[in-house]
Image (cartoon, rainbow, N blue to C red; front, side, top):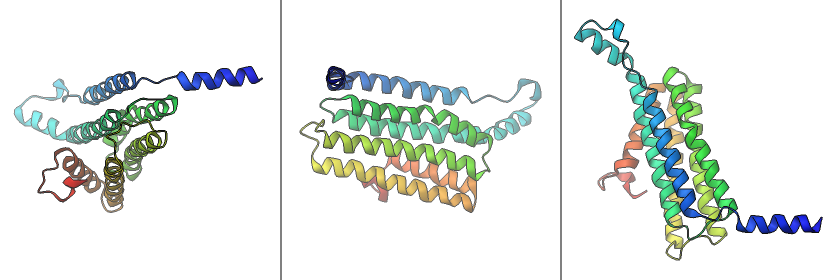
Length: 215
């Protein structure tokens, strides 16, 4: 019994300690997730198009899918940047932080599903709630990664208390704003989606003249 416990403890101390491998896996999964998004976009059926007007109407018809692609591409880009920021400050990894990031990547892979669901049922509050929950769990896993890395002393010396506060503040502020945007679904689901897209554009572009650029 004691021998088995000792072996398990030793394995936990040596397993999954490569930040580089974690980063490589993350980049690969993000790339696949982004590619899957565009594969869900299908041009109008050729047999239904007989004129410029038909093509225009066909493009308008797939407008919701294009909007979902834009929103989810921004979502993945934002969280890729957030994870890379965290990985850049990791001096080393351990098994726990690796599994936290694997949990984060699970929700990355779910973005294609929640995007498809919302694109197919764009007027349904439940579909938007599922998409918002996907964003929420991405934020939670990223926040937990910062918290654990700090507590386990896995961060580089330049990861000061101010760096941690800045990273956690950004996650909390934007998750709060995502929740507020999602609540607008009780008024109008497309309005809520539009607000989420605007919030994402702010996060991605964030010129200094915008209020939220400091978060």
